[in-house]
Length: 307
Image (spheres, rainbow, N blue to C red):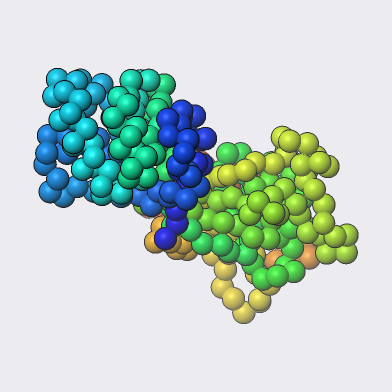
């Protein structure tokens, strides 16, 4: 299970810490969803998901004002007794001193945001989903080609890094070389990135390690990229029947998500970088509704029908 510290959450969301005596590094968030404890403030605690970040907006704050500080403090104390990760007051709403005393008693941080409740909730949920997403690390190279994330895989030494270098020369952007960390941010999206320690570095056999960002400039690198297409490099085998039409898509699965995958045979004279570039453009064209293989097939069948 992946976690995010309250301190990192506070810094990312630009929150004000109203309880500096609590060690925010020691408190962790394990749920990406958030909760607005309206029912809990009314005393209903059945099905209360206490592992979520609790958010107080204008509606909850107005209700507490009408209930009075004593009654509201009682309900907030019950909420904190469940050891919620933190309570966030949006719209810079005032926080009664009684709540801060309860915070110190239960060890639950109270934070405050400047933004509207709905905007904060949406951004917090989006960011936490990425940070807490299931993830794996695989051996490969991830490159942004014309806005499409292309993951290049294959046996060690087959030339993945050299292909990435050629693609950088052609104006595309490197995300990660050698190790790619893949996060499942939704049932439809995988996001790839590089480990912090190897970010922007490329290993070239015979030369060593080079820094793509330093050599080619900041426009040649990128920190994260959705994975749209996988290209698997493999040694040419004359006995293998390779797809020459592309009418049917092949897929590879990562973390339960399927991604279109092409197997590219390697042999002398083939410019793999241009092939990867063309594959990315062709994939983008298919997303826009045009399939060249299907168009050729329709022309051939139409011509045969007219003969």
